[in-house]
Amino acid sequence: MSSQIHLTLGQKEYFKGIGKIPYEGRETDNPLAFRWYDEHRMVGGKTMKEHFRFAVCWWHSFCGTGADPFGAPTKNFPWLRPGDPLGQARDKMDAGFEFITKLGAPFYCFHDYDLVAEGPSLAESEKRLEKITDYALEKQQASGVEPLWGTANLFSHPRYMNGAATNPDFAVVAHAGAQVRMALDATIKLGGANYVFWGGREGYMSLLNTDMKRELGHLARFLHMAKDYARQQGFKGYFFIEPKPMEPSKHQYDFDAATCVGFIRHFGLEGDFKLNLEFNHATLAQHSMQHEMQVAADAGMLGSLDANRGDYQNGWDTDQFPADVYELTEAMLVFLEAGGLRGGGINFDAKTRRNSTDPEDLFYGHIGGMDAFARALLAAHDILEHSDYKKLRAERYASFDKGHGLDFENGKLSLKELAAIAAKNGEPEQRSGRQELFENILNRYI
Ligand code: XLS
Ligand code: NI
Ligand code: NI
Image (cartoon, rainbow, N blue to C red; front, side, top):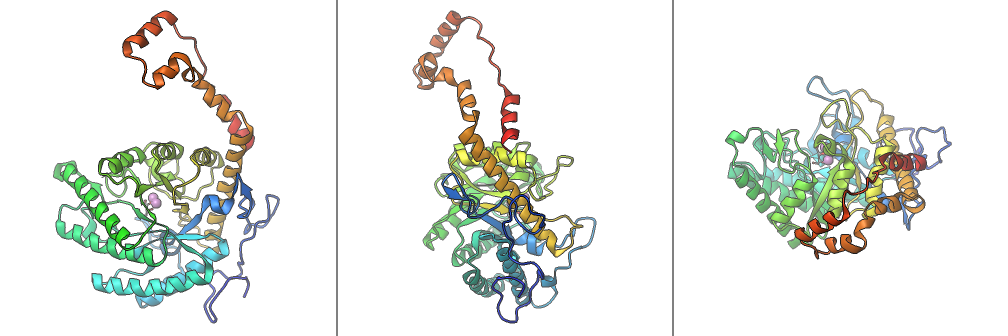
């Protein structure tokens, strides 16, 4: 065996010649080593491993063949050879656990039908899920790798073309319910820490044929039912809604963090539900990721992150691996100031490019992403600990720390009194926002 990875006797090795990815520090020339991500390194009282809780996603990494609307698959994954669905699912699981263990990530994320192909009936799908989760449990025990979250794919099958929980046809809503019940069972059986709802088809293509209020009510009813069921089964984790404004629907109901916070509160789901935020979804909503994270953090709902990045020259969800340390440092500032994530971790919802066809490319993508996060975490920690960043920001609000400003914050002033104070003060002095200074602080610590 070329590595210290646990492979069952006789089991095929898919990533041959690649061993456990070591941490070698920033001077290394080894492209298959970490330069910044040292899982044992302490940063502000926690190890990097504990801060990030990195996860590899099953769908892009082991199911994504490189097919796009204009072309055929480019990635001939040996574990996707046609054959019986369970045999194929086991091969994929061997490859997945081999990859994740070699990478040294503690978690994975999955959709129900990433694990094994959907069957011709619900009953057959349930049988397949039973069997593949038995196998997954063996792999988990051997490797220590566990699910960060599970979810149900409620968007690929044609039956969901008009939505799943928000479908105008009750029969489809019921089918989605059956599928979510099975996905929850699988997640609970595998010891998944959390459960995600991403509603790619929960939205509309045309408002003309859509009763939005009724559909949103159905979505809330559905989420309550799923939560109640999972709690009855003893599930202790959080439920995350993953906002995305569009794609595949023209307009999706879980548009952005603010919309989801409002939805969760309006329908009484707070406490159980938090958000899983994704970089490329933030930019699709015309926000920055740090904006989305701040909105969630301020609402106590910063649950988990889907890490990737978009391409600023086009609009869609390109799901590239994160590489922009400046952008990540801004995100890590919010992350650290919020005290980290509520229950979640950082899942690479990212795919190698269609023309990245070597087995190593999957390692390069994840190693680069983990290193970029680690570097950003160190920079953000230094900024918060050693620079004037927090002081400079606090100074901008100093006029609310005492006197009339404090009275205003505490609700002790009326609009009339505000007007009297303004009349007495005359024109306010100009105060610089000093954005360039703040930006320079980031670059200094990166
Ligand atoms: C799609 C979403 C999806 C979710 C899981 O854009 O990011 O991959 O993370 O259903
Ligand atoms: Ni996405
Ligand atoms: Ni995602």
